[in-house]
Image 1 (spheres, helix red, strand yellow):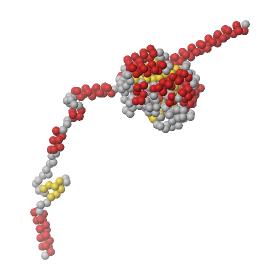
Image 2 (tube, rainbow, N blue to C red; image 1 turned 135 degrees about the vertical axis):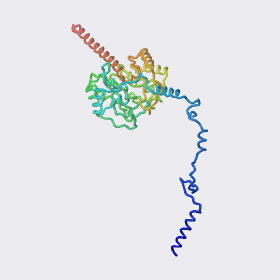
Image 3 (cartoon, rainbow, N blue to C red; image 1 turned 135 degrees about the horizontal axis):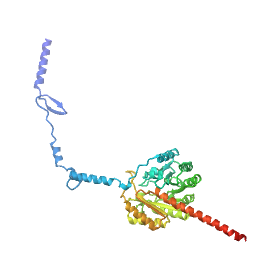
Image 4 (spheres, helix red, strand yellow; image 1 turned 180 degrees about the horizontal axis):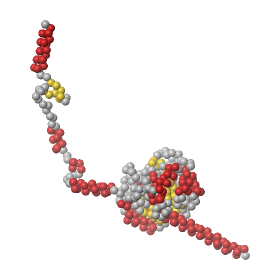
Length: 400
């Protein structure tokens, strides 16, 4: 009996499954359970229609008709040509035994050079001696971190750089004496965090070099010391041969190029006060071109420098260190630089160096400056000898 009941229940359940409409889920969509029916393919006609009726690629690129493949290639090549450096700005990568030796010495003595920090294109020529054989280096003292943030400079910045190294003046002097350099440029980061902005440290470094390498010619490329005369004077009287301070650019572009704490009149005051402090000291300044200046502004800047008593001026092309720095407005041609060099001579500068790769501490410039200093030293020695001879000639007459 029980077996008959179980069979009837199974038959009843199976008949219900056959007769009752059933459904199942297929990809989250309900469809008929008919085994012969296939899932209907969804066609997004509305989206396709909107896409076909919408804007084309040319609507986003320009208002004119789309470029042909040949025109597009020509346009791309034109952009690439503009992005490339002009041929006159290409230089060899600084390599060689002398470069490696100097780098090793710098690391051992924990010294920094502006040649490396500013990525100077002339580093190989300067360190190796170049065609004139005048080996030079530009040492950056007071650390490698600046308290200012000029838009053209690649040196690190911070409001609170590390403390000064008290042994740095002696380390610098010892390194330079070991290298046997002919001409050295001392420069520094701005140290607005220090009470004297680093003036005493600068002067102490010059005196240390004079003690250990008395024959070496020393140029100091200094900060503006915020225009304080009492901080400019110790450096000017420390025993250096050339006092340099860069005006950087024309007056109208100062705020867009330099840090807000630097300005045109303040820099001009530094150069003027150096001449008042020590009239026989050579003074020097530099102008970057290619940052948006006009010819009239460059001319006025050169006249102002000459009025301030500046003896040496250098003009060079601004080179963008990284994409984070201000863009190059234009690449000035060598012919234009030659024009400004001629103008410099006409304005009465003792020496004017102007060229795409010229920098404020350019090697070739230092060769000519060293020649000027040697001639001055020779003339001074001749004057002393003449005075001594004249005194000897007069002495018998005095005795008589």
